Length: 121
Image (cartoon, rainbow, N blue to C red):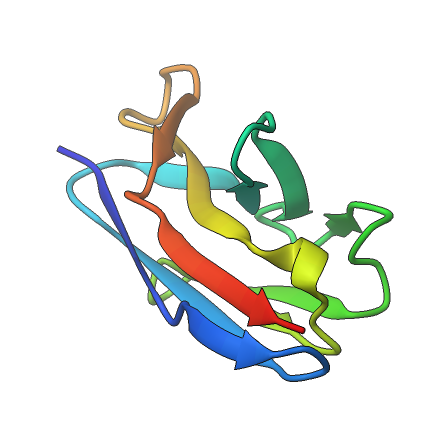
């Protein structure tokens, strides 16, 4: 069974920084793309940043220039460094991994349990 466990959320003042980490465990062949999503109260879940197995990255316009996503394939880990945080960044942040259970199987989406990020003004 594939599991994703996030860490690093918390409360921070506007302008501050937080680093989120997510470790993937279980038995599977490989991980394709990984990413971070967030969901604020009353809003839909949205992509914050994504990274392919080859290291190509993409960011939402709302965080571009303030966040950096990285991954360590050996550790099955994806990280999100967030700087210059704003109150509108407040949300539950979810880690996502597109996992191939077998090398010949199609990728499946797995999610972490979410970690709360709260930015005070």
